Each structure stands twice: as structure tokens, then as C-alpha cells.
Amino acid sequence: MPELFEAARLGALEVKNRFVRSATWEGIAEADGRCTPPLAGMMGELAANEVGLVITSHAYVSTEGQAGPWQLGIYNDEMIEGLSVMAKRVHDAGGKTVVQLAHAGCQARSILTGETPIGPSPAQNADDETCREMTHDDIDRVVEAFGQAARRAKEAGFDGVQIHTAHGFLLSQFLSPAFNQRKDEYGGGPSNRARIVCETIDAVREYAGPDFPVLIKINAADFLNSHGLTEEDSLEICRILGEKGLDGVELSGGTRQSGKFIPSRTTQAASPEAEPYYRDTARKFKQMLDLPLILVGGIRSFEVAQLLVEEGTADFIALARPLVREPNLVKRWKEGDTTPSQCLSDNLCFKPIFGGKGLSCHWITKAASRHA
Ligand SMILES: Cc1cc2nc3c(=O)[nH]c(=O)nc-3n(C[C@H](O)[C@H](O)[C@H](O)COP(=O)(O)O)c2cc1C
Image (cartoon, rainbow, N blue to C red):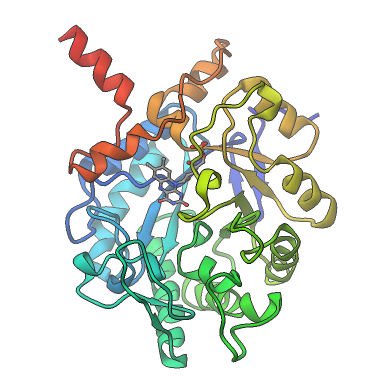
């Protein structure tokens, strides 16, 4: 029976245990996206605390795809130096690390980019702007940008990349009928909607080499009433992408517009069994597909994580907010204190980022100021 602290592979990538830090925007990069020493240090700290695989926050592959302030960038070669410090910090602490490559599409902020957001089809974004429908030249340019970004990740010493195709960002918008109403070969059925992701995987392989590990993060479903990406489509798209030789899939879900089913839900599980948001889809995935699976979303208890891996529902357990609350959570569990994460899932960790102070847990900051 597989154990949480047993090594496993994501295709070509060997990870020392089953714990993954899911991509979490920290808001402490330079204004132009370069990695700062505190950001590199934060990733090193996670690895030193026994997180086997550290996935960086979403790094924008081209300037027009920036989603938020002080977001990590990987859009030109000047980014490589800072990123290489980050990769080294993780490796020195005994971990592995991949860069999450992203383009925000319609969710890009024109106030930061100076450009009109682009997407598969015209749509209103949260800033009430209408994004521009991408031409074939735009698609080629963005695919190339993902490929070049993967090359930079490799040159910086990372162990692979994760292509962000979840949460309503650009590639997720292409996968979703709610955002993609195209009439050309990039719209329509699941294989057409997945075409840009297939081309992106090809570009990553072309620029970073055929053996460089490639993961994706994808929505189990969009949870957008009847018109978003469904579970059935998601599994079919995973099958199509799996044939491209992916090294693994991280299953997430939701978009900003998905009401209470946003990717970082604020609801509390009624019981440990109810913690994982996408357990049912994960089970179907593992029955249908021969691909390593990372499961994220809501997991807070050691016993739940252990059961998910033991019963083969997931190969890896990813955590985002619990590692903001307790960067040492995995080490604590390993050392025998297996009480659940103290994370309240209240999303108050977003607040300091928008204020320019960077990702932190409200409850830790509050306790620290009480003791000061
Ligand atoms: C502050 C914050 C930043 C996030 N940034 C990213 C990101 O950069 N890329 C991404 O794919 N998901 C991002 N997420 C979503 C998480 O990776 C994760 O999918 C979600 O929070 C559910 O997992 P959890 O219950 O363990 O937090 C972010 C979540 C939070 C709370």
C-alpha cells in the first residue's frame, strides 16, 4: 500500500514523497515579475519543511497575460537569473520544483499590462472590459511564448513545468464552452477546444526538449451552470492530452465566476470525508486513465490524504492555503503530530497581497501582533 512519505514518479520526475505545494500567488515578485530573494526563500522554506514538489505561483509567459501585481514573470531571459536562485533554494533543501506557466487571457489586468485582454471569444472580464478575440497569429504567438518560457524554466534549473489550464485563465477559457464560442478549429468539440493546449505541449517539448517533465493543472469542471466545462469533457480532454505524453495532471476546478465553487472555496467540510472537492472526478480519472494524478482542493487532514493515496484515488496530495497557515505542516505530520491543518479556508490570505504586503495568513499575523 503506498505511503504518503514514499517516493513516487510524475513520469520522468521523481518526487521524494506525495506532498505537493499547489501554485499560490505570493505577490512578492518585483513589479516587472523578476523573482526576489524573499520569494526564492519562501519556496526553499517549503522544501526544507518536507514538501516533496514545490509548484511556483502562476508565472506569466507574456506581458499581456499578467493577472495581478507583483506576480512572478517568465516572459523574457532577464527573468532567468532570479528564477535560478529559486530553483537552487529548493534543490539545496532536498525538494523538486516546477514553474507554473500561465497566461490570464480575459482575466489579465489592462491596468498592469497596458493592453486589451485577449481570449478565445469576446467576453466581459471582472474589470468590465471586453476582451479581444484572438486571431490565429495571436494563438501562434502565445503558444510560442509558452514554449520559450519552458526553455527559460529549464535554463534556470527547474525540474519541469506545469501548464495552467485551470480556473478560467487563457487555456482554461479555450477548454470551456462558456468562454469559447469559436467557429474555427479551436472551438466546438473537446478535441478542438483542446487544440491550443496540444500545441502548447508540443512547443514546450520543442523548446525545452522531449524529456523535460510537463504537467497540467485542469478543472474537473467549471461549475458554471450548464454551459461550462463538464466533468465528462474534462476527462475526455485529459485523455487527449495524456496521448501527448504528459507526465502528470493536477485536478482542480472552478473559475472566478463559479459562485461558491470557486477554486479556493470558503466553505468548511462537515466531516473529514467531505474535505476533497474533486474526489469523485479523481476516482473516475484513475479508472479511465493511466496517468499520475495530483489532487488539490480542500484537503486538511492527514488521514484523508493518507486514504486518498492508499485507495489509489490520487498519487499526490496538493495543498495551497494550509501551507500559508503552516509552512511546516508536512514536516509536522511526518514527525507524528497528525492533527489537521489549522487553515480556516477563509481566503483572508489574499488580502495582504492586494495591499502590497505579500501572501500571509491573517491568523498568524494577528497572533504575532498580539505577542509583540
Ligand atoms: C492566495 C492564493 C493564490 C493562488 N494562486 C494560484 C496560482 O497562482 N495558480 C493556481 O493554479 N492556483 C492558485 N490558487 C489556487 C490553489 O492552488 C488551490 O487550487 C486552491 O486554493 C484549493 O486548494 P486548497 O484548499 O489547498 O487551498 C491560489 C489560491 C490562493 C488562496
